[in-house]
Image 1 (cartoon, helix red, strand yellow):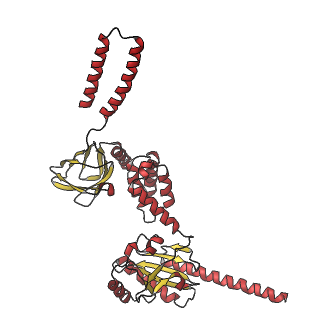
Image 2 (cartoon, helix red, strand yellow):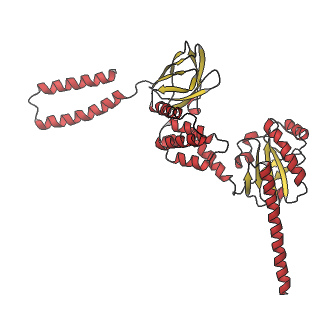
Length: 389
Protein backbone atom coordinates (compact mmCIF):
# COMPACT_ATOMS: atom_id res chain seq x y z
CA UNK A 1 0.00 0.00 0.00
CA UNK A 2 1.33 3.52 -0.84
CA UNK A 3 0.68 4.78 2.68
CA UNK A 4 2.84 2.06 4.25
CA UNK A 5 5.68 2.85 1.82
CA UNK A 6 5.54 6.52 2.90
CA UNK A 7 5.78 5.44 6.55
CA UNK A 8 8.80 3.26 5.78
CA UNK A 9 10.49 6.08 3.85
CA UNK A 10 9.92 8.48 6.75
CA UNK A 11 11.46 6.01 9.21
CA UNK A 12 14.50 5.48 6.93
CA UNK A 13 15.13 9.24 6.49
CA UNK A 14 14.76 9.92 10.21
CA UNK A 15 17.16 7.10 11.12
CA UNK A 16 19.76 8.29 8.61
CA UNK A 17 19.47 11.85 9.87
CA UNK A 18 20.16 10.83 13.48
CA UNK A 19 23.00 8.53 12.42
CA UNK A 20 24.99 11.48 11.02
CA UNK A 21 24.19 13.74 14.00
CA UNK A 22 26.75 12.22 16.37
CA UNK A 23 26.80 15.27 18.62
CA UNK A 24 23.20 14.77 19.86
CA UNK A 25 23.04 14.15 23.63
CA UNK A 26 21.89 10.77 24.93
CA UNK A 27 18.88 12.33 26.72
CA UNK A 28 17.82 14.28 23.63
CA UNK A 29 18.15 11.17 21.51
CA UNK A 30 16.06 9.14 23.95
CA UNK A 31 13.25 11.72 24.02
CA UNK A 32 13.21 12.01 20.23
CA UNK A 33 12.98 8.25 19.91
CA UNK A 34 9.96 8.24 22.23
CA UNK A 35 8.23 10.93 20.14
CA UNK A 36 9.13 9.02 17.00
CA UNK A 37 7.62 5.82 18.40
CA UNK A 38 4.32 7.59 19.14
CA UNK A 39 4.31 9.21 15.72
CA UNK A 40 4.96 5.91 13.95
CA UNK A 41 2.17 4.16 15.86
CA UNK A 42 -0.31 6.84 14.72
CA UNK A 43 1.02 6.82 11.15
CA UNK A 44 1.00 3.03 10.82
CA UNK A 45 -2.54 2.84 12.22
CA UNK A 46 -3.69 5.31 9.60
CA UNK A 47 -1.69 3.63 6.86
CA UNK A 48 -2.99 0.17 7.72
CA UNK A 49 -6.69 1.19 7.71
CA UNK A 50 -9.19 0.83 4.89
CA UNK A 51 -8.49 3.49 2.30
CA UNK A 52 -11.52 2.99 0.02
CA UNK A 53 -15.11 4.14 0.40
CA UNK A 54 -16.36 1.36 -1.87
CA UNK A 55 -16.75 -2.41 -1.74
CA UNK A 56 -15.19 -4.63 -4.38
CA UNK A 57 -17.44 -7.64 -4.94
CA UNK A 58 -16.27 -10.45 -7.20
CA UNK A 59 -16.74 -14.17 -7.55
CA UNK A 60 -17.52 -17.25 -9.54
CA UNK A 61 -20.49 -19.58 -9.28
CA UNK A 62 -19.88 -22.63 -11.42
CA UNK A 63 -22.76 -23.78 -13.58
CA UNK A 64 -24.62 -20.48 -13.36
CA UNK A 65 -23.80 -19.45 -16.94
CA UNK A 66 -25.09 -16.05 -18.04
CA UNK A 67 -27.62 -14.56 -15.66
CA UNK A 68 -28.52 -11.48 -13.64
CA UNK A 69 -28.56 -11.51 -9.85
CA UNK A 70 -29.76 -8.78 -7.53
CA UNK A 71 -28.31 -7.30 -4.36
CA UNK A 72 -30.59 -5.65 -1.82
CA UNK A 73 -30.30 -4.65 1.82
CA UNK A 74 -31.55 -6.77 4.70
CA UNK A 75 -32.80 -3.59 6.43
CA UNK A 76 -33.07 0.17 5.86
CA UNK A 77 -29.32 0.62 6.39
CA UNK A 78 -28.93 -0.39 2.73
CA UNK A 79 -32.21 0.58 1.09
CA UNK A 80 -31.41 0.14 -2.58
CA UNK A 81 -31.17 -2.66 -5.11
CA UNK A 82 -28.21 -3.30 -7.41
CA UNK A 83 -28.06 -5.60 -10.42
CA UNK A 84 -25.19 -8.04 -10.75
CA UNK A 85 -24.61 -9.27 -14.34
CA UNK A 86 -23.14 -12.80 -14.56
CA UNK A 87 -21.03 -13.91 -17.54
CA UNK A 88 -19.99 -17.56 -17.66
CA UNK A 89 -20.62 -17.77 -13.92
CA UNK A 90 -18.26 -14.88 -13.12
CA UNK A 91 -19.09 -11.43 -11.82
CA UNK A 92 -17.51 -8.23 -10.55
CA UNK A 93 -19.16 -5.18 -9.05
CA UNK A 94 -18.26 -2.06 -7.07
CA UNK A 95 -20.77 -1.10 -4.36
CA UNK A 96 -21.00 1.96 -2.11
CA UNK A 97 -22.51 1.19 1.32
CA UNK A 98 -22.48 3.99 3.88
CA UNK A 99 -21.43 1.66 6.69
CA UNK A 100 -21.28 -2.03 7.65
CA UNK A 101 -24.49 -3.57 6.26
CA UNK A 102 -26.23 -6.91 5.85
CA UNK A 103 -27.41 -7.67 2.31
CA UNK A 104 -28.98 -10.43 0.24
CA UNK A 105 -27.79 -11.93 -3.02
CA UNK A 106 -31.00 -12.82 -4.88
CA UNK A 107 -30.92 -15.54 -7.56
CA UNK A 108 -33.29 -15.83 -10.52
CA UNK A 109 -34.95 -18.93 -9.01
CA UNK A 110 -36.03 -16.87 -5.98
CA UNK A 111 -33.44 -18.26 -3.56
CA UNK A 112 -31.25 -15.82 -1.69
CA UNK A 113 -27.98 -15.85 0.20
CA UNK A 114 -26.84 -13.44 2.94
CA UNK A 115 -23.56 -11.56 2.97
CA UNK A 116 -22.09 -8.58 4.81
CA UNK A 117 -20.09 -5.65 3.47
CA UNK A 118 -18.34 -2.53 4.69
CA UNK A 119 -16.39 0.28 3.06
CA UNK A 120 -13.00 -0.94 1.84
CA UNK A 121 -13.93 -4.65 1.80
CA UNK A 122 -12.83 -6.92 -1.02
CA UNK A 123 -15.48 -9.62 -0.95
CA UNK A 124 -15.11 -12.80 -2.95
CA UNK A 125 -17.91 -15.33 -3.45
CA UNK A 126 -17.22 -18.86 -4.62
CA UNK A 127 -19.72 -21.65 -5.13
CA UNK A 128 -21.76 -23.87 -7.40
CA UNK A 129 -25.22 -23.41 -8.92
CA UNK A 130 -25.99 -26.96 -7.78
CA UNK A 131 -25.36 -26.01 -4.12
CA UNK A 132 -26.39 -22.41 -3.61
CA UNK A 133 -26.71 -23.08 0.14
CA UNK A 134 -22.99 -23.83 0.46
CA UNK A 135 -21.20 -20.83 -0.99
CA UNK A 136 -17.92 -19.62 0.47
CA UNK A 137 -17.69 -15.89 1.10
CA UNK A 138 -14.52 -14.14 2.23
CA UNK A 139 -13.53 -10.51 2.66
CA UNK A 140 -14.40 -9.73 6.29
CA UNK A 141 -14.88 -11.64 9.58
CA UNK A 142 -18.70 -11.56 9.41
CA UNK A 143 -18.79 -13.44 6.08
CA UNK A 144 -16.03 -15.84 7.08
CA UNK A 145 -17.72 -16.69 10.40
CA UNK A 146 -21.01 -17.49 8.65
CA UNK A 147 -19.20 -19.56 6.01
CA UNK A 148 -17.48 -21.56 8.77
CA UNK A 149 -20.83 -22.11 10.52
CA UNK A 150 -22.47 -23.38 7.33
CA UNK A 151 -19.55 -25.75 6.70
CA UNK A 152 -19.99 -27.14 10.21
CA UNK A 153 -23.70 -27.77 9.58
CA UNK A 154 -22.96 -29.42 6.25
CA UNK A 155 -20.71 -31.88 8.05
CA UNK A 156 -23.64 -32.95 10.25
CA UNK A 157 -25.66 -34.35 7.33
CA UNK A 158 -29.34 -33.77 8.11
CA UNK A 159 -29.44 -32.44 11.68
CA UNK A 160 -32.72 -32.13 13.60
CA UNK A 161 -34.34 -28.77 14.29
CA UNK A 162 -33.21 -29.05 17.91
CA UNK A 163 -29.56 -29.57 16.89
CA UNK A 164 -29.73 -26.62 14.47
CA UNK A 165 -31.07 -24.37 17.21
CA UNK A 166 -28.40 -25.54 19.65
CA UNK A 167 -25.64 -24.86 17.10
CA UNK A 168 -27.08 -21.45 16.18
CA UNK A 169 -27.52 -20.50 19.85
CA UNK A 170 -23.93 -21.50 20.63
CA UNK A 171 -22.65 -19.41 17.71
CA UNK A 172 -24.66 -16.35 18.80
CA UNK A 173 -23.40 -16.63 22.39
CA UNK A 174 -19.79 -16.86 21.18
CA UNK A 175 -19.97 -14.11 18.52
CA UNK A 176 -21.35 -11.06 20.33
CA UNK A 177 -20.39 -8.54 17.64
CA UNK A 178 -20.95 -10.51 14.42
CA UNK A 179 -23.69 -9.64 11.94
CA UNK A 180 -23.85 -13.37 11.26
CA UNK A 181 -25.38 -13.70 14.75
CA UNK A 182 -28.29 -11.47 13.72
CA UNK A 183 -28.88 -13.57 10.61
CA UNK A 184 -28.90 -16.82 12.64
CA UNK A 185 -31.13 -15.31 15.33
CA UNK A 186 -33.69 -14.43 12.67
CA UNK A 187 -33.43 -17.70 10.72
CA UNK A 188 -33.52 -20.20 13.57
CA UNK A 189 -35.48 -18.38 16.29
CA UNK A 190 -37.47 -15.28 15.26
CA UNK A 191 -38.93 -16.81 12.08
CA UNK A 192 -40.48 -19.79 13.88
CA UNK A 193 -44.28 -20.06 13.80
CA UNK A 194 -44.37 -19.60 17.57
CA UNK A 195 -41.09 -17.91 18.59
CA UNK A 196 -39.72 -18.39 22.10
CA UNK A 197 -39.35 -14.71 22.94
CA UNK A 198 -37.80 -15.43 26.33
CA UNK A 199 -34.98 -17.36 24.63
CA UNK A 200 -34.58 -14.71 21.92
CA UNK A 201 -34.27 -12.02 24.59
CA UNK A 202 -31.59 -14.06 26.38
CA UNK A 203 -29.63 -14.48 23.13
CA UNK A 204 -29.62 -10.72 22.51
CA UNK A 205 -28.54 -9.80 26.05
CA UNK A 206 -24.83 -10.43 25.43
CA UNK A 207 -24.72 -8.77 22.01
CA UNK A 208 -22.61 -5.63 21.75
CA UNK A 209 -24.29 -2.24 21.85
CA UNK A 210 -23.50 -1.80 18.16
CA UNK A 211 -25.53 -4.91 17.25
CA UNK A 212 -28.41 -3.98 19.57
CA UNK A 213 -28.62 -0.55 17.91
CA UNK A 214 -29.10 -2.06 14.46
CA UNK A 215 -32.67 -1.67 13.08
CA UNK A 216 -33.45 -5.41 13.07
CA UNK A 217 -32.52 -6.03 16.73
CA UNK A 218 -34.10 -2.75 17.82
CA UNK A 219 -37.35 -3.75 16.08
CA UNK A 220 -37.20 -7.30 17.44
CA UNK A 221 -36.82 -6.08 21.04
CA UNK A 222 -39.80 -3.74 20.53
CA UNK A 223 -41.78 -6.71 19.23
CA UNK A 224 -40.82 -8.78 22.29
CA UNK A 225 -41.99 -5.96 24.55
CA UNK A 226 -45.36 -5.93 22.74
CA UNK A 227 -45.62 -9.72 23.06
CA UNK A 228 -44.91 -9.55 26.80
CA UNK A 229 -47.67 -6.98 27.30
CA UNK A 230 -50.14 -9.21 25.42
CA UNK A 231 -49.06 -12.56 26.89
CA UNK A 232 -51.43 -15.07 28.48
CA UNK A 233 -52.19 -13.90 32.01
CA UNK A 234 -51.93 -10.18 31.20
CA UNK A 235 -54.91 -7.83 31.08
CA UNK A 236 -55.93 -6.83 27.55
CA UNK A 237 -55.87 -3.15 26.69
CA UNK A 238 -59.14 -1.30 26.14
CA UNK A 239 -60.31 -1.25 22.52
CA UNK A 240 -63.01 0.54 20.55
CA UNK A 241 -64.03 -0.39 16.98
CA UNK A 242 -67.09 0.27 14.77
CA UNK A 243 -69.29 -2.56 13.54
CA UNK A 244 -70.79 -2.71 10.03
CA UNK A 245 -73.61 -0.33 11.09
CA UNK A 246 -71.18 2.18 12.60
CA UNK A 247 -71.95 1.34 16.25
CA UNK A 248 -68.88 1.43 18.49
CA UNK A 249 -67.97 -1.95 19.99
CA UNK A 250 -65.87 -2.12 23.16
CA UNK A 251 -64.97 -4.76 25.71
CA UNK A 252 -67.71 -3.46 27.99
CA UNK A 253 -70.28 -4.69 25.44
CA UNK A 254 -69.44 -8.19 26.67
CA UNK A 255 -69.69 -7.61 30.42
CA UNK A 256 -69.57 -10.78 32.56
CA UNK A 257 -68.75 -12.90 29.49
CA UNK A 258 -65.77 -14.81 28.22
CA UNK A 259 -64.97 -13.20 24.88
CA UNK A 260 -63.33 -15.05 21.99
CA UNK A 261 -61.93 -12.58 19.45
CA UNK A 262 -61.28 -13.94 15.97
CA UNK A 263 -58.96 -11.89 13.72
CA UNK A 264 -59.51 -12.36 10.00
CA UNK A 265 -59.75 -10.47 6.66
CA UNK A 266 -61.77 -10.82 3.47
CA UNK A 267 -58.54 -10.92 1.42
CA UNK A 268 -56.97 -13.76 3.43
CA UNK A 269 -58.01 -17.19 2.13
CA UNK A 270 -56.85 -19.12 5.20
CA UNK A 271 -58.74 -16.91 7.63
CA UNK A 272 -61.84 -17.07 5.42
CA UNK A 273 -61.63 -20.87 5.61
CA UNK A 274 -61.30 -20.64 9.39
CA UNK A 275 -64.70 -18.94 9.58
CA UNK A 276 -66.22 -22.43 9.29
CA UNK A 277 -64.65 -23.29 12.67
CA UNK A 278 -66.15 -20.22 14.31
CA UNK A 279 -69.56 -20.94 12.78
CA UNK A 280 -69.52 -24.33 14.55
CA UNK A 281 -68.46 -22.73 17.83
CA UNK A 282 -71.17 -20.07 17.48
CA UNK A 283 -73.93 -22.62 16.81
CA UNK A 284 -72.83 -24.68 19.78
CA UNK A 285 -72.42 -21.79 22.24
CA UNK A 286 -74.95 -19.16 21.10
CA UNK A 287 -77.23 -19.92 24.08
CA UNK A 288 -74.33 -19.76 26.53
CA UNK A 289 -74.81 -16.44 28.31
CA UNK A 290 -71.30 -16.61 29.74
CA UNK A 291 -69.65 -16.70 26.30
CA UNK A 292 -69.50 -14.31 23.33
CA UNK A 293 -67.78 -14.27 19.96
CA UNK A 294 -66.37 -11.19 18.22
CA UNK A 295 -64.86 -11.04 14.75
CA UNK A 296 -62.31 -8.29 14.07
CA UNK A 297 -61.36 -7.80 10.44
CA UNK A 298 -58.10 -6.35 9.11
CA UNK A 299 -59.82 -5.14 5.96
CA UNK A 300 -59.10 -1.77 4.37
CA UNK A 301 -62.19 -1.76 2.15
CA UNK A 302 -65.58 -1.63 3.89
CA UNK A 303 -67.55 -3.05 0.94
CA UNK A 304 -65.26 -6.10 0.68
CA UNK A 305 -65.54 -6.65 4.42
CA UNK A 306 -69.36 -6.45 4.46
CA UNK A 307 -69.64 -8.72 1.43
CA UNK A 308 -67.43 -11.35 3.15
CA UNK A 309 -69.60 -11.19 6.29
CA UNK A 310 -72.66 -11.95 4.16
CA UNK A 311 -70.98 -14.61 2.00
CA UNK A 312 -69.53 -16.46 5.02
CA UNK A 313 -72.78 -16.06 7.04
CA UNK A 314 -71.08 -14.58 10.10
CA UNK A 315 -74.01 -13.98 12.45
CA UNK A 316 -72.04 -12.91 15.51
CA UNK A 317 -70.75 -9.38 16.16
CA UNK A 318 -68.21 -8.08 13.62
CA UNK A 319 -66.02 -4.98 13.90
CA UNK A 320 -63.40 -3.25 11.76
CA UNK A 321 -61.74 0.19 11.77
CA UNK A 322 -60.41 -0.29 8.18
CA UNK A 323 -56.82 0.21 9.37
CA UNK A 324 -55.49 -3.26 8.55
CA UNK A 325 -52.30 -4.16 10.39
CA UNK A 326 -52.12 -0.60 11.77
CA UNK A 327 -55.27 -1.11 13.83
CA UNK A 328 -54.74 -0.29 17.51
CA UNK A 329 -56.25 -3.55 18.80
CA UNK A 330 -54.05 -5.58 16.42
CA UNK A 331 -50.94 -3.96 17.89
CA UNK A 332 -52.18 -4.08 21.49
CA UNK A 333 -52.81 -7.83 21.29
CA UNK A 334 -49.60 -8.44 19.26
CA UNK A 335 -51.37 -10.10 16.32
CA UNK A 336 -48.73 -11.16 13.75
CA UNK A 337 -50.52 -13.58 11.43
CA UNK A 338 -53.99 -14.45 10.19
CA UNK A 339 -56.11 -16.14 11.29
CA UNK A 340 -55.59 -15.51 15.00
CA UNK A 341 -57.70 -15.59 18.15
CA UNK A 342 -57.57 -14.33 21.72
CA UNK A 343 -59.76 -15.52 24.60
CA UNK A 344 -60.53 -12.92 27.29
CA UNK A 345 -62.05 -13.53 30.72
CA UNK A 346 -64.89 -11.29 32.01
CA UNK A 347 -62.25 -9.18 33.78
CA UNK A 348 -60.26 -8.76 30.55
CA UNK A 349 -57.53 -11.23 31.46
CA UNK A 350 -55.97 -12.99 28.45
CA UNK A 351 -56.81 -16.68 28.92
CA UNK A 352 -55.22 -17.97 25.72
CA UNK A 353 -54.03 -17.06 22.23
CA UNK A 354 -54.16 -18.85 18.88
CA UNK A 355 -56.22 -21.69 20.33
CA UNK A 356 -57.26 -24.63 18.14
CA UNK A 357 -60.93 -25.62 17.88
CA UNK A 358 -60.31 -28.49 20.33
CA UNK A 359 -58.49 -26.16 22.74
CA UNK A 360 -61.34 -23.63 22.56
CA UNK A 361 -63.90 -26.35 23.34
CA UNK A 362 -61.77 -27.56 26.25
CA UNK A 363 -61.46 -24.03 27.61
CA UNK A 364 -65.22 -23.55 27.41
CA UNK A 365 -65.79 -26.89 29.11
CA UNK A 366 -63.34 -25.93 31.88
CA UNK A 367 -65.17 -22.62 32.29
CA UNK A 368 -68.49 -24.47 32.57
CA UNK A 369 -67.05 -26.86 35.18
CA UNK A 370 -65.64 -23.92 37.13
CA UNK A 371 -69.04 -22.22 37.04
CA UNK A 372 -70.68 -25.37 38.45
CA UNK A 373 -68.12 -25.59 41.26
CA UNK A 374 -68.65 -21.95 42.18
CA UNK A 375 -72.44 -22.42 42.25
CA UNK A 376 -72.05 -25.53 44.40
CA UNK A 377 -69.79 -23.65 46.79
CA UNK A 378 -72.32 -20.83 47.07
CA UNK A 379 -75.07 -23.37 47.89
CA UNK A 380 -72.92 -24.92 50.61
CA UNK A 381 -72.21 -21.51 52.14
CA UNK A 382 -75.91 -20.63 52.00
CA UNK A 383 -76.88 -23.95 53.62
CA UNK A 384 -74.37 -23.36 56.42
CA UNK A 385 -75.89 -19.95 57.08
CA UNK A 386 -79.39 -21.44 57.23
CA UNK A 387 -78.24 -24.07 59.75
CA UNK A 388 -76.76 -21.38 62.01
CA UNK A 389 -80.09 -19.54 62.04
